[in-house]
Image 1 (cartoon, rainbow, N blue to C red):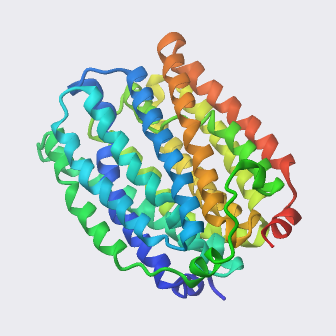
Image 2 (tube, helix red, strand yellow; image 1 turned 135 degrees about the vertical axis):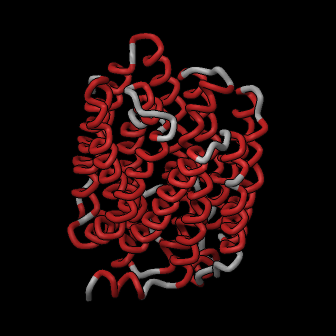
Image 3 (spheres, helix red, strand yellow; image 1 turned 135 degrees about the horizontal axis):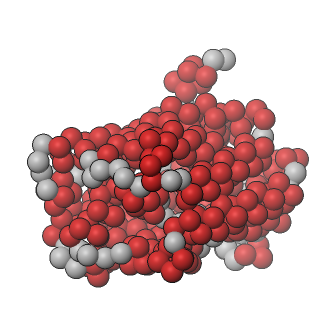
Length: 399
């Protein structure tokens, strides 16, 4: 069956969650690329403050994803967490326009990430339980494509509004419209029966020791990779430092989103056939090369930023959906909430030390070495994910 036919036959819950992510990310991503500019030009804060804000915000989100994931397993209910999570983001994001000092920005980013923490694992459980095992890569790929389509539209809107003469605060305020529409779509999502059925026979042990061994090895590889995966705000700041104008910064991020939108579905679906591990290894290697190139790119070669950021979009397309599909391969259905919670905990919590270290290195010895260390850590993660488990273990662990 052709790929487009498989995409058309995906259940409504996958498409509705795709629409929610499209709308939410269009709002989030026309604000997100402006934050480095907002911090530096309005709030007068540097890379160290930015690293602390993003690290704390993402760490908070990750802790709550484990909590919400465990409660999905225990209660058999995922939708309430999804609706409340997107609602909190919609309520806090426009308030960024009224911030006058960076501690208030930290508070609002913290609350926004609380919302992300509440919705992340439950949303992924709904997607994983809405399709058969041989369609998980496809389902997560379609969701990521919708997400990145929103991330492409958002920066384009921000760039247009800035070019029309609106200030940063006004641009941020307009993000409230798609945020509200995202809540409306989330209310239409239906709970898959598999979530309710699995809750009836679940044990309550959510701790590390209860997780399948292949899944724990995967999380260890992910942890090492994440230590080299600092906030994307540093990528945008580097692009600005290398000469991109205020209106070009959102556009270069839109290039990333465009590539990820086009390639997330076919690449994630490809992993249903060739195996997740192979695609993940090549994606993480591409990430390492991207960081090295961006860190050492001369300022007078900044025209290369556009193809470099396009290559970053390929990395995202080849890994985001695959990473989540691999989680559902390595654990049984009764543990999906906890498994996605642990996945998000590891991949988000370690962003705090990663972002703090990256910001400190940038300030102390320069951006070159910050990007180089990140590239090294991601390369070590590749070694672990390659040696950590075989493809045959994914089927055995999930049964």
